[in-house]
Image (cartoon, rainbow, N blue to C red; front, side, top):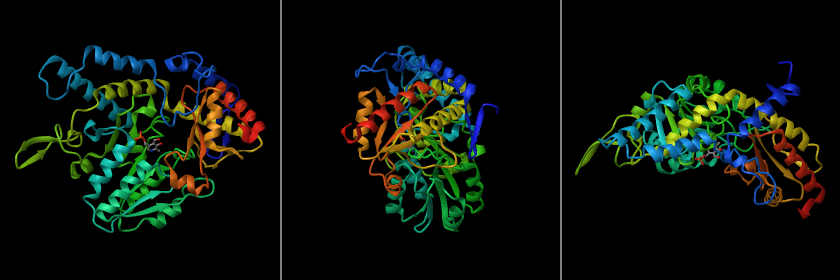
Length: 429
Ligand SMILES: Cc1ncc(COP(=O)(O)O)c(C=O)c1O
């Protein structure tokens, strides 16, 4: 700990430890073709600070997908030929890898989806068919739309009642508020692990026992946490957990809904079609066993192949290191951005991941993002698919910086330099 400073509950790398981590990140960049491809069209090197939207892809993932298409491609679970069996083996190997990565008891607990959004649509549609009008679901004000809109739709369709945990000035949830909102009618609490706008890391490990003690279930949105920290569904106490592969080095269009086996067994299927049935007649059908019961139609095998390679790569980088490095780089950057006149970094949660929103007085976030882009710096601008949170913060729009394992001090310094320039120019950026 000699090279760490403590801020709140979190230790940040400093001094020689920061330099060593930065050197490791520079080495990691070499694994990413897009980061080593030379100057962008704008003529400047790419400074990619939008990893919370999607991560860049390492060579190992790209190679795994190419290899799959060159040597294995076939449809799965239905072809009695060598390629079909190999493609099926690749799909099921990916499922086992995900189960292993998140500490699931069995690969039956891993349902492949298109991503976090589809996972929550599946969960909301299926679970709420088992609920009664008036049953309650608790969400928070900091949720991404993926963990709000499917529940609104369920409220319209099934009469379930939504309650929202507020967040405090700093951008944290208060456990006392959760205690107050939980009631005998609460059936599910569904919360994000990390806010995609403020970077708040929620204390899921403390929340789970409170939820379970009141007889409710806990769903966790791990879209921003799985790519940046070790995830163990048992340690978290998650009954359900959703994530998207594309934020964790894998391709777009593949993600996962984890659910405890007995819960998934008890839920009705969602979409209908091939694969999710064991038999079909003209007057009905019978449902397949887990996990295929929730996977109608031809699956995204190439995506699963990429996801397995991505999780293997992330494991080798060490997710705990990614968390420490990206949070330390965020702390380094925030300290310097806050020293620029007119720049505001929003929120100050107790524990913050490697992402945060900022604004520059008098400049619309879209104009600021366009100005940064002309310097080769990619940040996201807007409401970040978190309208309720953005509105609560009084932000019409904001820019968001988000780091990943390949982000370096040079990236942060490029942002600081160009923002200093933007602040000097003011509204004429
Ligand atoms: C916290 C959070 N939840 C859900 C999502 C939705 O992910 P996807 O669009 O991959 O389904 C995102 C994406 O940014 C997110 O940050």
